[in-house]
Image (spheres, rainbow, N blue to C red):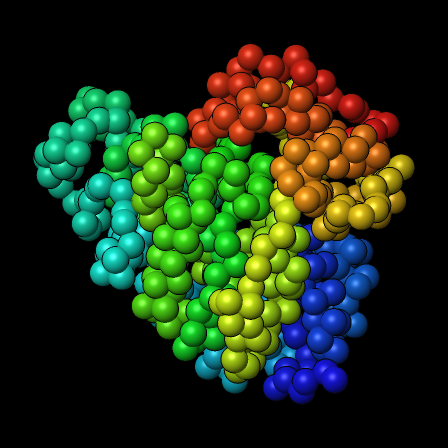
Length: 465
């Protein structure tokens, strides 16, 4: 029997595939949905799926999806009881979360104070250390003096990463190989951070070379926290994830237990509510892992966790943010098999990944056991040029990694998105790579691979994906 939640109508303050995903989760809970859209998204698939649509502003994100006042006003006018921010845009905006709560609505995410604490990368490192979670050697505070930065870099050893204290997504990051580069690159990182996040703050971390990117999915109800095991996201281009797997084939059970326990400890230390991800660097050579940041929202790559754990994380986060206790205890959460996700973007991989909006035609979606496609597409849909180029995510499951890879190849063969180039050729080539098949990768592997394999990324142009 369906339980009654203090939410009857959910406002979805996002767009694209995540808006479609949230819409379906809300419908599974018996909720009405109102899709908040820019003028460019009135004919989107998300708008088609929702019970109601409200326009919040012109196409440019600053005047629509990032306009907190417009978003909140539309949500209140619609009679919504809650707001789901998806990922990106206002999802990790502490002021917006506070404003939603002040307006008497439920914010489907952690409290503003938690977002504020964990969104400050330096404060988050301190919180992690206090919770007993290992961190990468580096700054204890935002860098204000270059001489101190030089002394710190010399003490932990070059190369070092210069990182923005706010934000994420790979922006505001530079790698300094020596003192001269540190002096040159620190101001650049600070300027980029200011432009991207409105905060000039930067800090320094030791660069863990040839590390893997491992992250743990957590879900909390404000009192208790459980984990849904780990994902690996080491295949990255310009520090942006493109291919994710769960679980990590590089992590043994003893490391996995310590890794997941540390993520739970950190989330409990901030009374975490909602879905979140604790991210780490993992050193293959030593078996050690280091906290880097926490994302206080649902992640793009959450479906691989859902596939191996047989759960719906979006439904789960709506429930706990509506005041329910966690549905499962830790011992009840098990993993099964292996899942892989690849991100299909409207980009031309043969032309330096240039964004290529266009009109979708000849859409063919692969179906079958262990295949899932989270997307925003339909034939005739005009992909707008104003936003992130993500079109959808192809997710596959298999009893083990080898069979998941085989299913990925099959699904890619059957996928077609005509009318515009996509990154499908990238994943076909990656799946053929001996290193990827052997899981002999790290966070810097793909950049070097791309330098040598551009010829394998021929655009499929106007006819197929």
